[in-house]
Image (cartoon, rainbow over all chains, first blue to last red; front, side, top):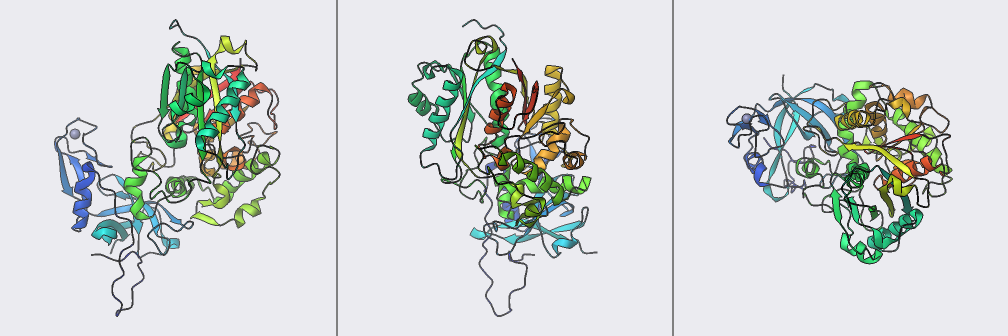
Length: 150
Length: 388
Ligand SMILES: [Zn+2]
């Protein structure tokens, strides 16, 4: 379920390159998200009282103001909302410009991630995508996306 | 001081030179521009009783007071949100004067943002994820290679461009106009250096397919300060008073500065629409009352989106509004007549406010005829300035 930063397959004989992608900055309220990602799970935060999803994570539900939250496994399916290619300067930790995209998740909210396994020119708004995980420095993982298998 | 309502006015503006290497400390830049603004107003520096800057300004209030010899400061405040703070400083200063709690409010922003650190480079270490600095961009963008203001801006701008069929060529026209304005402004870094649309299209991609190099503001060293006092007092001071007719902020639910991907429709700019609504309601004015506008232009798409949000044209129409020449000197709504943050300097939007003041006074180098009202916007905050 994981790929190196650089989606180009390495020669079979080479040792897997050390991840150079920046590790996430982990705050107390978002620890659940990154800890799940380390295990290859894509999760979200929902109000335990009214069921409202919220992102970015936060300690209180903006609808009913409950502080009770539950972590739920997400489908990992979403659609491309917007996408770009940072050319200059090359982002820290990347050898080639990654496609950076805003993904609209099936559960109804958006997050920033990367798109792989599709050329930049072929990305379209609304393109269905699915999650997988990419390694970072410090032995962590972050959720990234690719076109959804038919 | 009696706490009775008083109208507020800008009595002085001051600036250092704009450069790429100031050769002195940020505090010195802050002190120099502050002294220049107070001299412009004809107010002795010791009389400052309120001070406002951005959360991310590195100079200490007390340090600046010690330079200016401020005898008794009644108020200090800092405004979060990076460049969105720019016009909010005017709003806060106005409110302090309106409320009768301060008499001489000094606003400053001074930085060695080119020689000492690089705002445009990846923010991997430069700024920690503390409140007021834009935490979302660091927490939820960095590992994915979105590490610069240009990339954060582009993720939302690309949606705007998709929605309304805006191309990078359309954005280039904004840059060409502003560089034309800068070319005749001796204070501008790009004085005497206009560009063509071809130059723009030949500049390298910073973020494809949104921003080329010439869509981005500069990185600059320099400082700008503004002095706000009561309108009545300003009338007796050195310069023609510039009345702050109204000023406000708007930060709608789920909007954040620059890494702003969570509100309902990223083709819109709800913070600027909210600012426009509140500002027009507060002042009873409308877009057609403005003879010109100073619009925060860290990147060209922001100019298009704010032109629409403030009602100078309809949604999706800004690219044609620009193409038809409306925002040029001689057009129906000259915009960023100093060259803006792209052409003059990037003093985080405060140099654009100073230009609005000069235009109302009638002392700008690229003077627009008969300026009665100027709209000044930094996206999350806006103000209307008028002859007082
Ligand atoms: Zn709830």
